[in-house]
Amino acid sequence: MKKVVVIGSTNTDMVVKSERIPVPGETILGGRFLMNPGGKGANQAVAAARLEGDVTFIAKVGDDLFGREARALFQKERIDTSHLLTDPDNPSGVALIMVDAKGENCISVASGANASLSPRDLEAARNVIEAADVLLMQLETPVETVLCAARWAAAKGRTVILNPAPAAALPPELFPCLALITPNETEAELLTGIRVDDGTSARKAAEKLCGMGVEAVIITMGSRGSYLYRDGRGEQIPVQPVRRVDTTAAGDIFNGALAVGLAEGMELRDAIGLASRAATISVTRMGAQSSAPYRHECK
Image (cartoon, rainbow, N blue to C red):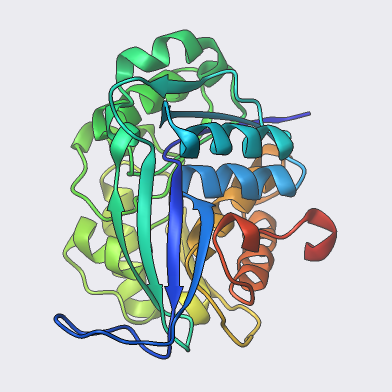
């Protein structure tokens, strides 16, 4: 079975769903509260595992209730947690999320132990990282840790995917290590300085990213699908329209599914098809990891 290694964050999401998201200084009554496991790395690991990927998750939790619950949940999802570390000095990560009636959201994250995942922490897992068929990472852990793992995997010819979220400036030496980068429109603009709002601007942004050393680019565009650029050619890939309930983890589900497809040897276009189906299902459900579909649902 092909191996997917995910390095990233794990949080507990505290979600309030209400008619609309309040403006600064405003209080809105009548919201519905949910507490769910989340974090971009954990979301992607669970998504990949539910789609029948052989997943190892490398992350850091606090020595607290949230951390212990997260570890138990990953094991229940059949994720290898042998490199899930416990930080004795920092709490587990927490995200406060507000979701409106249209499924749009805003999120504030207290990183906690996620911010202390260091390159030194990865040493014990180096062989696992270098043996991964696909290495998937995000940016809720330190950039120097992401760069370290990317270098190790790329040097062994492994497929490295970076989901550059949340948006942040990246060191130039990271881009040549990446087989794929998967920004959304906002993240693509931050990385390239090009505002992405249609296929033409998406192509310009993707061309610039490839000029930095990335092999291929997938810009996710919400209800408009995604834009794939590789080998000097680009195409818009549509998605099936659905009634959105909660978009919180749609990008994470997309990336987890994409990693599984590529690990299985799918052609990139087919892997995007699997990822798009999985993400489309996820936005019809509340929650982050809880919204991730299983393989039989993505036929």
